[in-house]
Length: 484
Image (tube, rainbow, N blue to C red; front, side, top):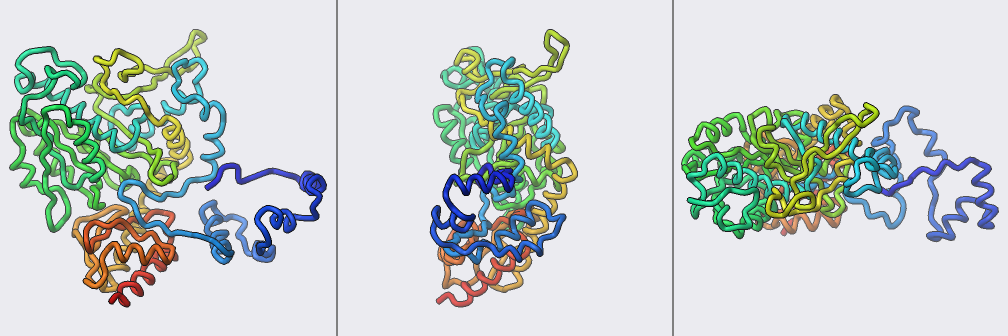
């Protein structure tokens, strides 16, 4: 949605503008700009409720806009890590204020108090949502954040278990030097439920070190990480176990069952939890509740647009015991010389601030502007609103899931509980998942993400109302039924 939707011009201002432009009214104005188009009948506006909320108001005008010519309106049901959430207009208005919008990297705290204050609030709110002790002032995106978490867990493991690392040499913060590499065969266990794009980034990050990745399979029935396979693969040289919650297929993992298996093993691996949809923690217990050592995930759902896949917002949290191994920057609250509240960096372990060899991360880009947007969004949302919105996402996804199964043309990929995303298999062999997606797109519906030949990953958010869901179901039935 574009910025600056509202121009508070009085009737006098409008008449003066018309006079300057030498036009008689708004119809002539729009004709000069984009040609002859039908304008909204003023009588339609009389039906508006005086107490309509912003989202309902948008939907009202969207219904009118659909009838206008050349309108390319898509209903989005694709997720896979980036989700179509509603962004209130207040966020674009507030983020455009100079104290938030202009300072990119606040090296000088005395002139960046607005940004630092917002980032401090961002850290506080996200830490509460995740149940983690400490959260940094954002990472590049969810994939990079998780890759950094894996490297951090490896550093922590080798420092705690030096006998499993190199035979000589002092362990440092990064792995650019051979003496800081683990021994060959060192393992990182990653659930197959991790977003495949995240998995690819992790592979790139550890490409030059000796650690190896081994996947833990999913239970073929439930779609959760298979506990028996995890037990089988836990060995003396496993430093890290990575789980996504909910996983890539939308299935809610049983962290209560998985965590004790990880932390009861000796030497103890580090339990890393990721998430691409932190809204889920409004209805399910957060990672910190299950004693996660590190959290790394995506925060784009908080007040940021999809933007064709970026820029995104990396979230990163950890137990306070591990704070000095965290990548990124942490903003703290203190007092200035006049005993007034002031904000400044209290920890910055990136190479921008310290020598490269001592840095915990060599990625110098974070997404502070996106983090400030998230802070504004969460403050507007409130605790109660956050829970209500999470529950709405859950309900809408289950309504869509149930309606699609009732058509008889789909079957569930997994039986496990899910949040706002689920995988289905198309039962008609005459149409592939890709063909189905393309035909739905022709009807103005982005139906989901192809998993394999007949599998599709579908998401629903608060932007997908009941009418939108009904439209998806009816179009899906017609397309699959007529497939030849």
